[in-house]
Length: 53
Image (cartoon, rainbow, N blue to C red; front, top):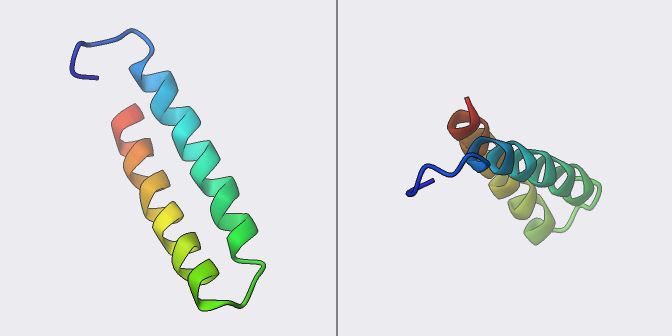
């Protein structure tokens, strides 16, 4: 992104997709660390979506 790569938006979109899938998987488990991971992944996905817009 810092060098205006033509692929920056695509990478951010991919990152959001990966983080969403990770969150979905982690939410399946009741362990505290899994729920924390899911929340962090959702936050990351939101930020990546903002950068890909």
